[in-house]
Length: 102
Ligand code: SF4
Image (cartoon, rainbow, N blue to C red; front, side, top):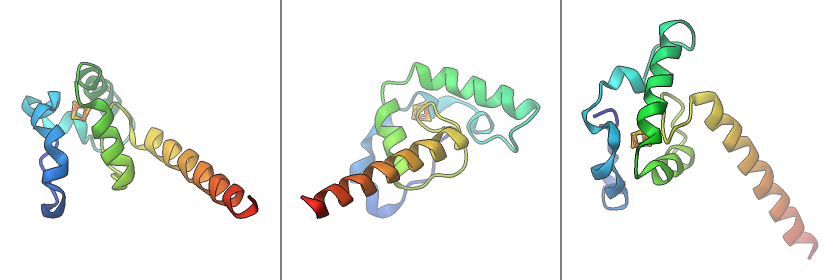
């Protein structure tokens, strides 16, 4: 299983892990070293597994909200999640600013 680390305080909220399509895959696919060469092949292979996964959305949500910087989560690479986080932060700041002026 690629996703083996579970914070004790979040066990109840993370039952989605039970249905993870990566449970029986090589963790090296999901946590390749680097972002070039063979690592790109591993990332692509991991994303292929994610594309079949029934818990892709909760996995991605967990990864974003818990700042998982490494590996493939919810069908996204590290850089893709950083981009998603930036977009969310901008949207939250814009919503907060709008609320202050309302
Ligand atoms: S979306 Fe990908 S990383 Fe997340 S549980 Fe499913 S297979 Fe694993």
